[in-house]
Length: 173
Image 1: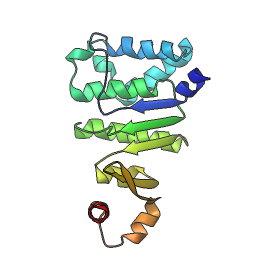
Image 2: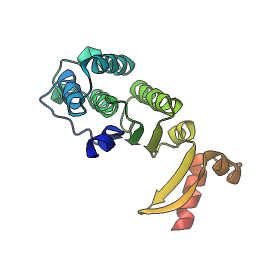
Image 3: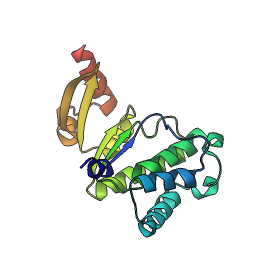
């Protein structure tokens, strides 16, 4: 069932792809309706996400008037409103201020703690170190390394994650 599969996945892309003329409230309601979320479940979930990401202050402003960080928060709410079991985050903190990035990191940790499957793409090695249990390095469209973070650290004792990453990429050519 296509609807069931779509309902189990949340995908946050690098570009927000938001409807500029809608408000965050309108956009999130629109996606909740697409996912056929019951009104009471939607209300509770929206409150949780809006509170966590501090969206309430701009919930009724048109998305076209929002900052990059505000738009990213709205995108995350849209991604998470249906409480998916699998969440894909593509560069979720790219270009964001420190506080907004930390809120997003907390949300990703929360997903992980709820035993959701989280696929996380980032060029920010400190975030990879904080959030990942397993590591895959893709370079020029090819998978060049795959291991648990624990095994990666053991294989690269004395090197920072960034140093090890650079060495692996350079060796792969």
